Length: 146
Image (cartoon, rainbow, N blue to C red; front, side, top):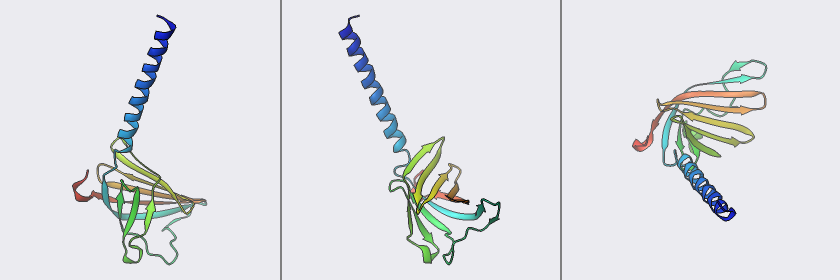
């Protein structure tokens, strides 16, 4: 095999790998692209670094009870209570793994992570310095999306 044919073969292998990788990334990135869910909050708890457990401290704001997740927009929009309706949290990433949909982002210096399972369960965590809020609930696909 000549040096030129080895170079051509190496370029072809590199191009094949690049196309395969790009196809994989596009497929994974769009795994949740058109999906939306309606979510209800069943429970929420805060744990402080000193071990204190209790309800999340929201000041004078009401605790969210329902929200919508739009994978295409990578956002969570509060639906209830009325006093919080329309508040939006943006996610930086949206991906699927093992049938679960995972969204991650940062809002006001806090980490925000959301997991939606195929069984219709939802776990939302909000982390800040010295505290983590854990929110659990249920989801239904909106408009028949899966």
